[in-house]
Length: 120
Image (cartoon, rainbow, N blue to C red):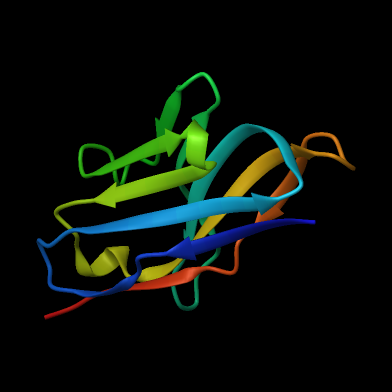
């Protein structure tokens, strides 16, 4: 079994910062990529940022220059540093990862999400 658990969400004022974490646990053999998606109320889930095992990062245009994705290989954990937050960043943030476990090759897993609310 593989699990992804997000943490770090909460309420923050516009212009503030938050750091989200997502840790992979269980029978993880290797992780090929990790990423963050978000879903605002009434909208479809959208890409925020992804990062490969080689360190190549990709960002949605709406967060470029404000969000930074990073990956701690030793901890199987991906982070999303969010700065200069805007009300439109309010959403449930989901972590995903392509993981090769002891049972399955390169399977996509999702976390359950963490809520980020940007409001004054």
